[in-house]
Length: 135
Image 1: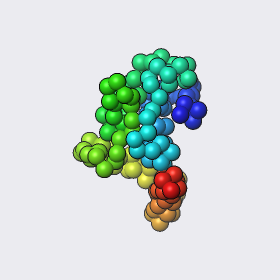
Image 2: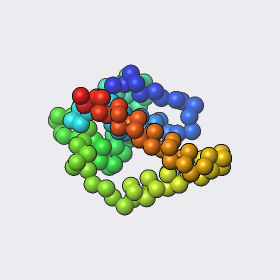
Image 3: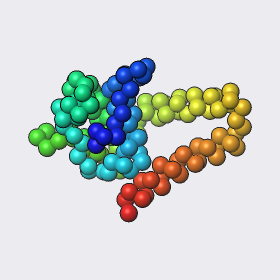
Image 4: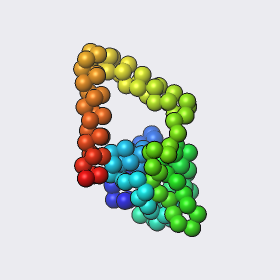
């Protein structure tokens, strides 16, 4: 798993958030399957050459988001999306991010139909990758 996690030391984004972003995107794309076991905190930290507390923090964020679950003595696994609950805070964050993207697109001169087509294309890309992985 660590092979595809890329840490950028020069990024403004904290390392733990880089890990959160990349794992959550891989889950959404189906690159990491439901029930798949993630590396142990210490193993992933060693592979990425970072502090284990950084990985632990990333896993904690992912667990709070309902994307992963830790089973004591067994490991950390990708959660089943059917068992996840949508909460208002998550929906608010998603809406704010979408608003930011729409504003950025408008400022770049992209019209509503082009933005919609771009969005639908990205959603289709994620869904198709997920379906191919599940076949």
